[in-house]
Length: 440
Image (cartoon, rainbow, N blue to C red; front, side, top):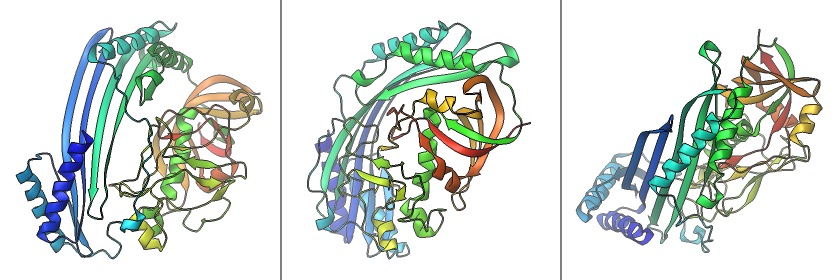
């Protein structure tokens, strides 16, 4: 499959060069997916999708244009290249645009085990969804299902660049999720659980997922409101990854080049406690965001974005690196600088010990909406979760807002010991001191 895609991308690049393009970069992709949804034990939806497309970026000097198409005959690809070059010649120049120099290209391609041959067929997907929903409904206090889903996907990519790069890879995915409702009428509460993996054998069993969703929904019944105050907040690991996401947005090279980041002057400075290291590992075996090379043909490697609390560098693609006068970091993609498999390593405290150490505080399980200013670091999110009183979770809370500034929040982050890799950005429970709760 990847050889076929590389050939298609190569045809686009070769024709663009033949027409007079100074450089060209093509990505051919083939994606296939199946999703089955179940509600009350009956199939509610079956979706199957197949798509094959090609994206081409053509350079005329320092000007460029991008086009894409899904008709991939030789004639259609040639027309795509002709249109791209015509548009590029009309576009304004960008002094930082361009492809990598040949000596910058990746030379060793790692094997990351990103594709499985044992993906479940539609009948198995239906079974997984039914089992997850049945397990959720079996939880005492659950009154109805909001639906369960099971899915599989397979994506192949071929990248060809006129600097000599021509590589591709294939990745697969499988997932199961369920949403459960507890209570009746206006007192109903909803929650969910899910599992996703590259290989089917790594997927959590659907009964565990269903019980997790049901238990969370029941625990949220009869929520209360709390008074406005300043307290420590524990982010459950399902939402703690959002804190890491805000960091990644602030150290993205494109934002730094625009001066649109509250961390634009923080390079080499201590922004977290010295106990905090945040890692990117794009070569993690079977990782949710793993990739053997970046989208511009450069090598990517494990690095500490934060090392003992110190910000070590920016997330850079070729363009942002040139803007900042730095070397690219192998974090390029079609959409700009991006990361793969970022995580906050587990701390020493157990989640239970963190709770026990709090006289009054909030345990957040859900964040709603977002008002985060990437320029100032001001942070405000709607939230729900559980109130902590004398070291114990006491009652569910809802309709509150938590606020602070990310600069101050980063300095007090304390990770718990329950790290679990469930997405391309992962974190354990995180305790953050001194956040403001807006309640009643």
